[in-house]
Length: 98
Image 1 (tube, rainbow, N blue to C red):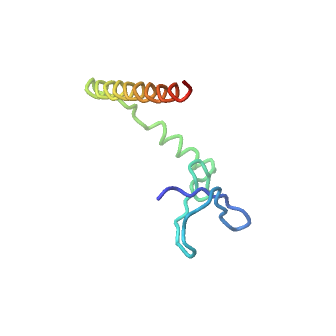
Image 2 (image 1 turned 90 degrees about the horizontal axis):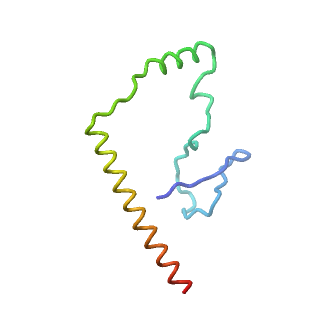
Image 3 (image 1 turned 45 degrees about the vertical axis):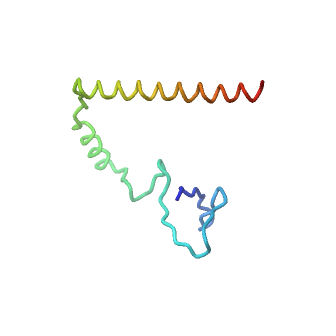
C-alpha cells in the first residue's frame, strides 16, 4: 500500500488526495520527515552540549579501494540505464510528433 499524505487540521487528519480505504479501516500515522515533535529532542543547553559531543565523536567514514570500485561500477551502471531509458523515451516522443 502506498503512503497516504494528510494534513492535521482541527484535530483531524485530512488526506491531500483521495484515499481508497473502507470506512473503519485502521491506519498507522507517522509525522513526515522533517516534522519536529517536542518529545524528539530537548533544546536545553545540556541537551545541545550532549548532541555536539556526540557529533564531534563521530569517526569519518573511510572507503576501501574495493568499496570505491563497487560504487564507481554501480554509478556507471546507473548512468548507462538512465541514458538508455531517456533515449528510449525521447525516441517515443519524437515518433509521436512525426
